[in-house]
Length: 76
Image 1 (cartoon, helix red, strand yellow):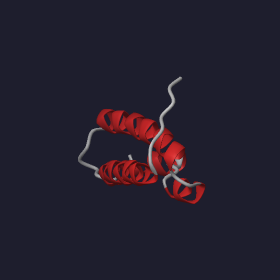
Image 2 (cartoon, one colour; image 1 turned 30 degrees about the vertical axis):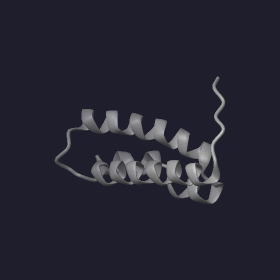
Image 3 (cartoon, helix red, strand yellow; image 1 turned 90 degrees about the vertical axis):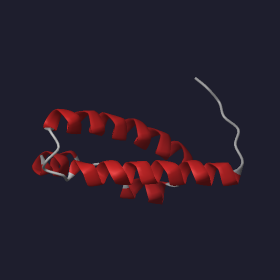
Image 4 (spheres, helix red, strand yellow; image 1 turned 120 degrees about the vertical axis):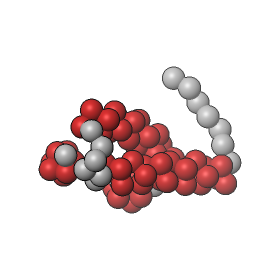
């Protein structure tokens, strides 16, 4: 386990970067041209980013980025 002390401005920057990266992955998951194996890897990366996001973002922001398992299977 690691601890991290950051300033509020740094927390906001980390939150912003994670949101942009997760938004990009969500957009790419909707692309039908991307192979399902690649999408599976993208979903794993999304889960890691989301776990990091939950540590720096308020709950109201996290709810917006919860990946529904039923939705993602329909999109594939």
